[in-house]
Image 1 (cartoon, one colour):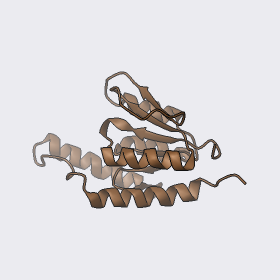
Image 2 (cartoon, rainbow, N blue to C red; image 1 turned 90 degrees about the vertical axis):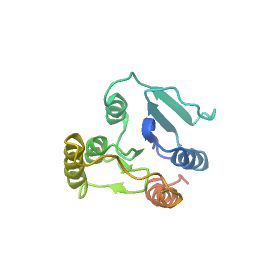
Image 3 (cartoon, rainbow, N blue to C red; image 1 turned 135 degrees about the horizontal axis):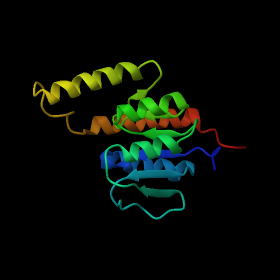
Length: 156
């Protein structure tokens, strides 16, 4: 396998099209992929694909991924606090819209998230991000290809 790199998916809130793109990339590059969720997922049968069902509760899936993912792995999550745990470990983190979380942008993203959460809790802002579009899907696919090409060097 490609340098023991793994793909980690925070699967509870992962859009279907993103899951499909990740599954195809896993098969194409022969990379193990682990879906972590607090519900049972229906996934294709493959020696590369596994899922971990964690207990229900706040951030249980996040904590599992944060503990298991290693430097050189790639994780997909829209959970900014999880990204903030993974980035310093050397895990490449993408959100489902293809945005790369980095040491440079993670603290700002966390601040904005916390601010928006406060606004939502006080009733100033309602609702969350807009629906997942085909443009989002294309941006994610392009970002994933770019990061996998950088991370995954096939062995001679």
